[in-house]
Image (tube, rainbow, N blue to C red):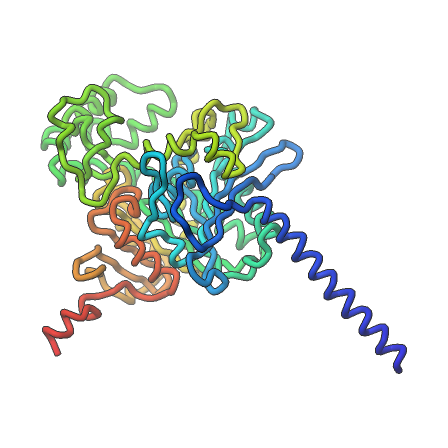
Length: 471
């Protein structure tokens, strides 16, 4: 009996030692990617990591990531993966440094972002597919033709291997988020996770101003531009009858742009003018980025608190050698880091594959879905997105559980929202751009926080001054 107990004890001790060895090995892997301090950053108490995950050993294809742990108590907070769109644009350059990461570049330094999403979650930013940002393929032929299926597959491989490097996060609640062409990347990755039966603790997805249905989303632009006074009645008429925007893009993709469509778009562009940012029609432009400016434009004020030149600052910052060294990043086959890829040739036909029905399948699988729209974006306007989500809810047989109404941040209306079946939600962010957290960071953070917690957005009745008015 004593001999049996002795062997049991040996087995238990061996098992414990093996676990300690595995955890220690994983910890040493992640420590190699640890960032002590980014050049010019203010002091912080949370940990940061950056580096590569090889998703294909044979082709030496590696995806670059930046990971900012939650500011406080990271062990109790979920893991959120963020994917920007394009296709071919950087989640680190746009998402992390221009929108909702912990820092934003300003001259030679980084300044703290008071509305960083790592206040509420552990934020993982991924440059995907290879050829975007610092991500690369040693086999350059990969860049010649990349599609949604390849991107989703590599993103899944990235997550699997990232969890090996950071095993303490594998059991966490996982949310996948993104914007723009993230309307393809995010739901396709989520569905692939479900189909693969990999035991990730996927709870929900959130996508902002997403491309979900090519014709609907692109052709919503004409009405948006006209209703905001950017084009005339006559131009609206030809933009909807002679050549609409989806037709123009389709002809452009195929290299067969007709004089008719070219003429319509020239007229549209002329009336909008080059001094308007179509990603936010109310926001002033970054003057150094616009050629042939008149001197008087240089004195125009910008919206308070919005640095319209932050993208230029980010490009400058991420091209610094000391920054790249600190990030454990390298330029493979490139001379410069760019916010959107110069080498990637994406399969543009994939833009025309609807993904709204993928959202439906995720909802049926029990995955919470939030679709939100910055309401000043003319590129993927809220009107088309709202119509799609309302139609999807009807198709799924979901009843409205929270009717269309205003939601609040502080004492002001932050947007409007509608919830279907307590699992599918649509929300607008008032005054926000295509990249909503860029121009409305406070309102975007409230939306993000409530989404993670599975709570409804604040209503007027929740506000203290309203309660005082109506005791």
